[in-house]
Length: 52
Image (cartoon, rainbow, N blue to C red; front, side):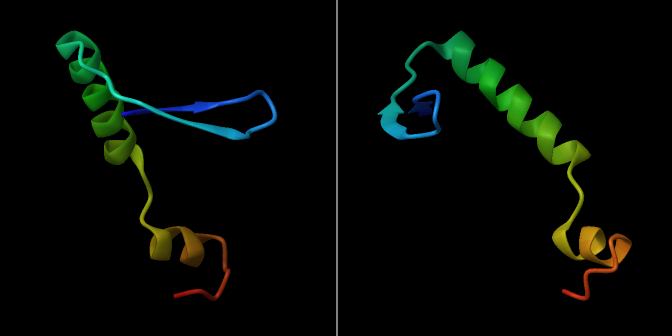
């Protein structure tokens, strides 16, 4: 599902994606983001936020 927003960040709803190539592309982007993500507690510790 792809989320749709207006320019002012108003949520318009979701759109079901049925194109398999598009699904694979979105899964790649998701996996790449998770690969580079920082865990919340690690981020908090690095920023000295005291949330750990």
